[in-house]
Length: 113
Length: 114
Image (tube, rainbow over all chains, first blue to last red; front, top):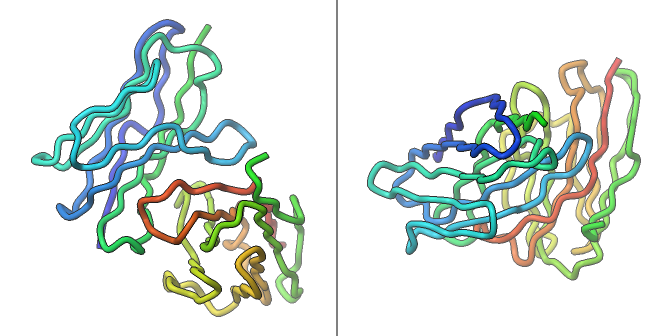
């Protein structure tokens, strides 16, 4: 089955700097890669996702890149702010459509003001 | 609010108790999920129901028993739990149960087994 590895497990950055979180997956058939953000004491929420027919997707300060050949994808957060502090989870899913997501172990991001 | 409500928010139980967790979604979704979140294995999928039929059971011990009476409600019945079962139990829903859909999570039930 699919295995998703996520690095680093913790990340501290200065406010205004960029943060990058990387994930690798094992199943070459996986074609959907979402990222969820979980603030302290709150529920996980989808922040961005990418499908395998594109290599990059942006939404304001966040972007995700996908390298299908290398089987890895990354989350990029620019101009980080204290409210970006949270745990970020990557995930992967393969066809058929009813195959559940497999999550990485999460990255705890701390943005230092 | 995401439209997924879980009760109770906190639960403390002994190993011989029987309790149930409840989840309700008001989004008109057809699929519901139970996840276990602990320090060792964040976001570990336990069960998936699609149109009230169980479509995934990730080798979960029988001391956890799910029930989905309709597409809006999901229960997790607990009995003779172990201390290592202490964790945050998250319910989620999605439109049709496809792995490529957005998941809407509830706030979770923080379970402590003594």
